[in-house]
Length: 303
Image 1 (tube, rainbow, N blue to C red):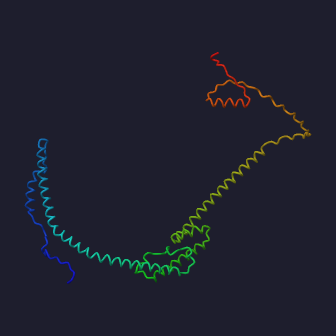
Image 2 (cartoon, rainbow, N blue to C red; image 1 turned 90 degrees about the horizontal axis):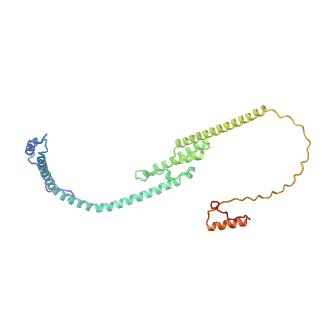
């Protein structure tokens, strides 16, 4: 007995191919009855008639739609039952499929891990000075783990990569550029020689602009200093020389008599103070400590 889905009922020619009803009759009658609504204008006096007409038409429309939904439900009843039973059969098949799929995926993952280890071993035995600057991750391609990618092809790609990097780094070193470290770092980011050379040119252009600016500033400074020097020399030449004075015999300056220290002048000042008791006490102590005389001043306005 072969496992084949066979439709028993209805037979192949027993499926509903069309649902017939008095479409032409209804369409003709509707067309005739609805003609009176074409261009019909209601007035304020006949607005109630408009509401009645609208209700009548909506009622008929609802009856048509309800019949449509009823026929749809009746047509779908056997299909819904059929669909539920098919889903039950599919669920039975899914159980072993999931179990098998888990084993297949486990096998594939194990093979991918083994292949990755083999690729690492191929990388490890490669003899190249640039391996100190690059890693397997720089060249690793996830497609290598596919079954269709042979180890011979992978090994060739690794060899070609290391050779390319070695040759292009040597080209950079041969430039003997003063920006070598930056250019090498740029190259190792994407292993693109054109980008690295463009970086070298950009750095050189920037350095040249900086040097030109520095020289321009130095020349401007030197010119300003020369101009200032020339101006001073011209002024010195234009100024008349003072007449020569006869040399006087030197005489010893008399010793200055000691100056007597002047007596301090006592000044009397009347002023008012607005302060707290503590501040007044502090002021009094200060004056006492510095020998300042003080006394009460009679109110002049009262006088």
